[in-house]
Each structure stands twice: as C-alpha cells, then as structure tokens.
Amino acid sequence: MSSIENLELKREVMLKLIKALLDGEELDEIAKIISMDPNLSARLLKFINSPFFGLKKEIKSIVQAIAYLGYRNLKDYVFVLLTSSLLKNANRDEIKRILKFAYLMRELAKRLIPEHEDEAYMVGILEPVREEIGEEIKEILDKAGVSDYVIAGLLDPTSKLGELKKDAKELMGICDELVSGKEVGLPAGLSEVKRDELTESCILAEDSAQSVLSTL
Image (tube, rainbow, N blue to C red; front, side, top):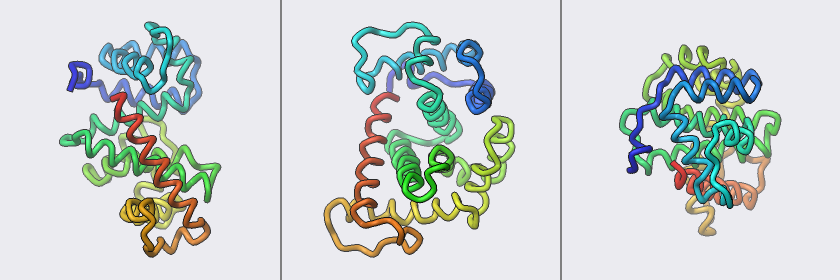
C-alpha cells in the first residue's frame, strides 16, 4: 500500500464531516472540517485525481474537490473511509466485498424502494462494522447524525432496510452463478425483481466496487 493508504484518519473528524454532509452544510464549512485532518485531505485529493474520474487537470484545492464530487459522492467516499478505519483487519479483498455489497444494496433499493437508495448504500457499507462492534455502532452513528432509518436497517431485521439487507446477502452469494448464466433459485424477498435485473444489479455492483477500490 502507498504511504497515503497507510495514513491514520481521525474518526471524530469523519463523524463531524458525515453529520455536516447529512445536514447540507455549505461548501466552505465542509472544506473547513476536511482540513482539520491533513490525512483525510490527502486521501480526498488522491481520490479526486485518480484515473476513476479521468480529469485532464489536477485538482489541488479541497474546495474544488468537493465542488466536483458533490455531496453524494463525497458522502459515499467518507463512509467507505470510516468503515475501513473501524474494521481492524480489513484488507483490500474485504473492502471490495464490502463495496460490492453496498452497491448491490443501492441497486436493489433503486428497484424496490428508490426513495431510500442512499440509505440502503449506507447500511451496506456499515453492516460489517455492526458485525464487528455490535450495538456500539448506534452510538457512533448517533454522533454522526445518521438517520434512525439507517440505524434500524442495521439493527432491526424486520425494518424495510433490514429485510433488504437479508435478501441482498442471499443474492450476493449467488451473483457469480447468475452472471455466468447458471439456473439458481432466487431470494424469495426479491420476487418482484426480474432475473435479468438481478443479474444486471450484480454486474453493476461488481464494476462499481472495482472502480472505487482502485482509488483507495
């Protein structure tokens, strides 16, 4: 890993940043928070200048980086960084699996509960943290201002996102077979989604995960 990948991030700064993003704070305030952690600033500039975005001119300013990324992309990226920093032993393969699951959650939500696709992504990204640290995640997310809807998705299996998470885990286990064209049984909870749409969701999740992983 590069020296930037090894930089330790300040969790409190990331929590403050997530809250500011969720609250829709002004660009200058977002930039000010990011600048509190030089390591986070370095990571963000590395991300925006990666081949993933294919920029013709290097971005050197945090304000420019935020303006180019937009709130959603920045929020997604910060959640990835928060998750990877909270997981003690996560390697690149594990981070890719987490990313694939999060994007699969988003793709399924687009088809089933489109008004909650961003929350579905958050649940997917944070699920391995919940598995590792348990109920403590509620306190962390409360500090970050994350919605009760997301927290319920993580902690309550009967919530909408909790049920989607269960179905997404089942689908994740058969994605390779689906993509290769094998006949496999589909998750009962996803009966409203066509087989070819589930296959497409698996492919999009894999491609998105690989693209983001290449920038980390």
